[in-house]
Image (cartoon, rainbow, N blue to C red):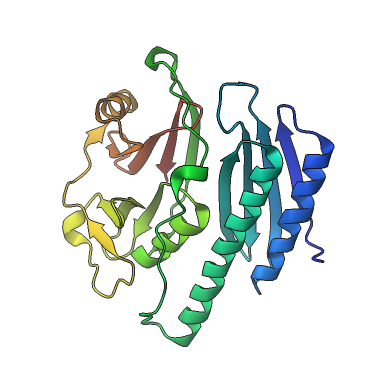
Length: 257
C-alpha cells in the first residue's frame, strides 16, 4: 500500500466514509508513476439539487515532480465518482510515464500515443445559469512558461482541461491549445510566426488572429458564439487572455503576465 498522503476537502453533504474512501483509492495511484508525487489533494462536492443527474463530483490534483496532473469527474453517487477519479488519474499517469520514457529514448519521438482528452460523458454538467445572473467570479493570472506545442498538448491532457494558455516558443507569443473536432486546435496571437514542423501532436493551426477586446466585449463575444471559451488580446496589456464558461454557469478569466 502506498504511503502517499492525500488531503481531502468537501462541500455539501459528504460523509466521513466517502472522504476515507477517497484517501484510500487515490493513494493507490502512486504505483502508476516512478516520479515522486509531492502533493495529492482531492475535492468532493455533493450537489444538493435532486434533479441533477450526476450530483456527486470529485476532483483531484497531483503534483508529480513539479508537473500537475488533474482529473475532474461527476457521477450519480459519490463512491462511483471516486472510482472514476481513480481510474482517470491512473490512465493519465500511465500516459505521463509513457511519454517520459519515450522522451528519454529519443528527442524525435514518433510512437507517442497522443490522446485528445477523456470523453465528456463523465465530466460535470454545465449549469445553464440565466445570462443576467452570470458574473465573472474567478480570475487567475499566470506567468506563462515558454513551451513547445507538444509540451502544451501534454499539459492539456494531464490537466484534463478544455483549453490551455501558454507562451509558444517558435512565435514567442501567447497561444491556446484546445480540443477540436477529433484533433487539437492551436490559436495564436501571431499564427504566421508559428512553426509546427517536427510537432508530434496532431494539431490544426487557426489562421485567425484573436481580437483586441476589453472584458465586457469578450463576454459579449462568448455569449454570441456559445463556445466554451474565447481567446483574445487584452486592450490594455496586449497579452493573450481566455474567458470561459465555468461549470457553475458563471465566467472565469485566465490572464498572463
